[in-house]
Length: 433
Image (cartoon, rainbow, N blue to C red; front, top):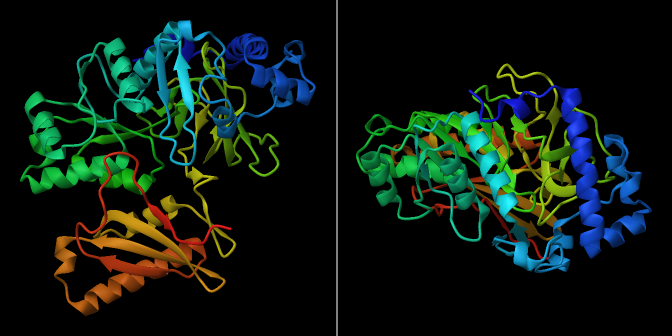
């Protein structure tokens, strides 16, 4: 049942001792090998010897994405470039990309964690894994690929794009596990239907989806349209890539691999640690990474931690699925809005397609929110009166959920651009101050 029984079911007390030992090694590695961390710790008045318990973690300074950009490209590496065997980076759409490096041992660790994650999500060595995450500098594709190979499964390195060919290959090659973004899974389901196929024509049994926030209602939509079990996986390149945490088949929170990552939840405004069961910003400290140790890395992801026992037997803390990010959270007339809230409402109502766009604008001094919702072919042929009624109902439900006045615009089928990677959900037209 487990990929690594010893660590995944370790008693909490024993796990805590292991974390402390690994934390002390990590802090020492960062202090003596990364000038940024040495300066940051000195400014915070802390040295490696001050870390005597896990409680001392809060003495350490935070790390942000900006710190990685400021030390672009290799300034955060704790080993010489001659020991780096792989380099990945973010897209850099908001400035310099963040660059991450891996030693050979880091790749081994990542592969083991991804194999562990795939098993946790329901995969076995007998599966054919259709890997539609992007390959290249993005960590998703190669992360899943190496994990699948470590597991001993058959992996199809299809990457993204050419969706009709993807469907053909899934059908002809007998793919049993699909890995991609949840928005691309819905697009695949749409193309499968357009090609005159049904989920029964494929052998898919489960999908492992991540790289963007998605709601439980979106999970239900994917499961219904593809006839599979949909599992949420979480990771980020700065911490290691995919495989930081994943749901088990209980689907009651994502197990964080705590023998490699020390999680915290903090108040995003004050930086103060918050107790289990309280939502806030997710922060990670790596415990085993050699090339790029990260200390108290602020993910900007909103989640919550729980240590309640899971019936699967794994003892590692679980995180609630990410509900949004502090930096893609929209503030509209003083109201915090996450795209996932709108998505959940639309999928709860049903009847429309699961494709939407939030258009934020400013009229005079007032921010406005317009939600574009794509209707199905069947709905599009309805009478105008029926469409107006649907539009009014969607608007009322969204306004009730957000506590905010919104406009709703029903748009024709295929109007909203499909995504083969992370879905773009927001167009913010407000002038930048």
